[in-house]
Length: 185
Image (cartoon, rainbow, N blue to C red; front, side, top):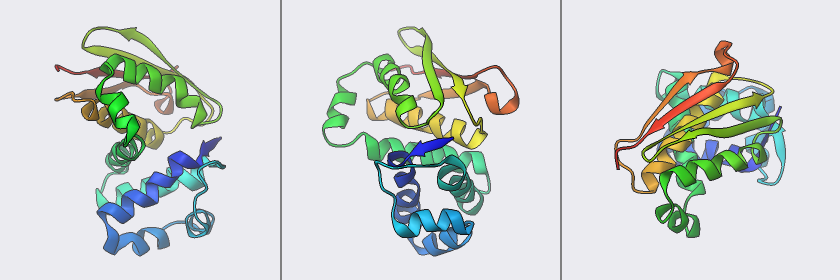
């Protein structure tokens, strides 16, 4: 399975922005194949192996800075949303409904993860359910990264007290990954 460089690029940027004094420690903790990706520079238009470019590097973020791989993945996803939803996109998000933002994100999901499919299955006034029904390499790190991204995207739109719960997980053997997302705004 492959991941688009656009999604990969935010991982080292996250480390540099929040842990600049430990960037080398993080980079040195990666296997040689992962190090090579970041030392050569991530090309946003390229596709990369999801393990080497995203799962392992994000897992190391969690282990080094949070003592919890999934928490690190969640924070990495939040950072990715901040980077992706800036400039004109920030205005778009601010003037869109929360449900529309998540619906739009689910439509572009496969443009970032090859062999994947995400869809909105239930949309209410202050909640939405999103499921990943196809993901050729299920992994909790990626599931948490996506959850963090959706949470921060809704916060950027102006929502407060956003809750994103992963109630089913392909990585844990369920038939799909299900995100239950609520916001009281």
